[in-house]
Image 1 (tube, rainbow, N blue to C red):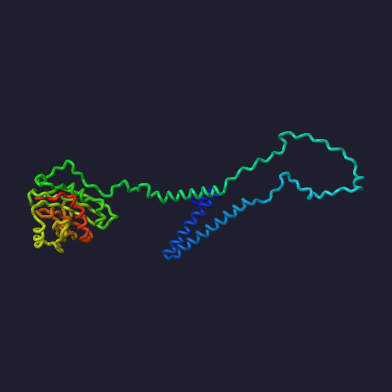
Image 2 (image 1 turned 180 degrees about the vertical axis):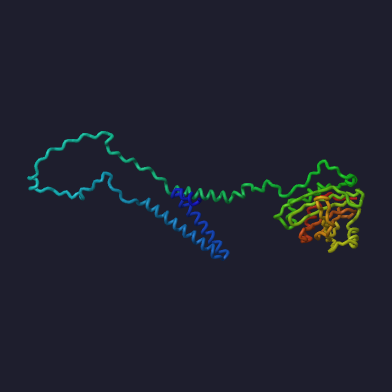
Amino acid sequence: MLGFLIRLLPFWVREPLLIVVGSVLGVRLMYLAFRDGEWVPAGIGAAFLVFTAVRVHTVVQALRARRSPGPVAAADGTGSAKSTGTATPTVSDTAAVQPQPQPQPQPRPPAEQRRPVPAAAEKEPNAWGQAAAAVAVFAALGAALWLGPRLLPSEDAGAPHAVSCPGGEGEELPAAYKKTPRAVTGGELCAALNRSDLAQLLGTPTETATAASGSSNTAPLTDGKVAQPEAEVQFDTYTVHVSVTYNKLSIAQYVKLMKYGEETDVKTLSVLGRPAVLASDHTMRIEINLGSGGSGGPVEQGPLARTLSVALDGKDPGGYCDITVWSTSGALPDDSVLLDIAEKLLPTLPERTV
C-alpha cells in the first residue's frame, strides 16, 4: 500500500523523498553497525545507500535532459534551399521553355478551413522548487514525529500516578482520638504514606500503587483507650504498612520486650534524632472462604517482614510509629529503604510532646 501511494507522487516529489529517506536510514544503520560491531545492519545500510545512489543518478539524468533538449524540426516541414536540389537553368533550356501563364491568386480559405496555430507551450513547474518542497514536507513530518511525544501529553498524563486513599468525610472517630492530643487519623496517615515517590524509595520506580487504605483503629487489648491509626499501600513487589500507637511505651522499653518475642535481627539506631529500632518478624496468613458456610483455613505463618519503629518525639516520652515492609516472595529491601521512608514520613506527622 505504501509503495502504491509513493508511485502516485510526481517525479520531482517522489525522488527527493526517496533520496532523503534512503540516505538517513543508510547512514543510521551504518553508524549502529559500526558502534555495535554487527554485520547485518551494515549490509542493510549499504543496500539503502546503493538505492539512494541510484535515485540520485536518476535525478541527475532528468535534470540534464531538461537543460539540453534535442533539435526541433521546422514547424512548416520545409527544408532549406540547399537541400532541395534545384539547379540553375542554362541558355538552351531557356529557349525551350515556353512562357507559362501567370498563376492567379487563390481565394483565401474560410476560417474554419484554416490550419490551427499551435498554442503556446504551458509553463512547466520548477523542478528545484518541487524538490525543495518535498524535502521541506519530509522534514516537517520527521520533526512532528520526533517532537510529538515531547510536546503532546501522553495517554497516561491524565491518569493518576497512584491509587487514592479512601475519603474519611463523615467518619466517626473512636473516643480515644478525642482524648489523644494531635493524633492523626487513618485517612491522614494514608495520605502521608501514599507519596508520589514511594515506589522510587522502595527501589521500584516503574511500579504504581495497586491499593491504598487507611483506618482509625484502636490498639488491641486496650479496651479502645489507645488510638492506633493504620495505613497500607500495596505495589506489585512490596507492601508498606504504617501504624502509629499513642501509648506510653517508649522505644527503650520496646527493645527490652523484644527479648521475649520472636523478633530477629534487632538493631537500635537513631532516625531524625529520635530513638528507633529495626527488627524482623513473620507476618500472619489468614485464608477466608467466602463460599457456603463461610469457613476459613487455619492461621499460617506469612512471609518475613522488616519493621522500623521510631519514637514520636526525640525525648521518647512514649508512643511510636511502625513502618513495615514485606513482599509475597519473601524478599526484603535494604534497611536504607525503611530509613528513607521514615525520613520522608515522620516530618508530616505531628510530634507527641508530654
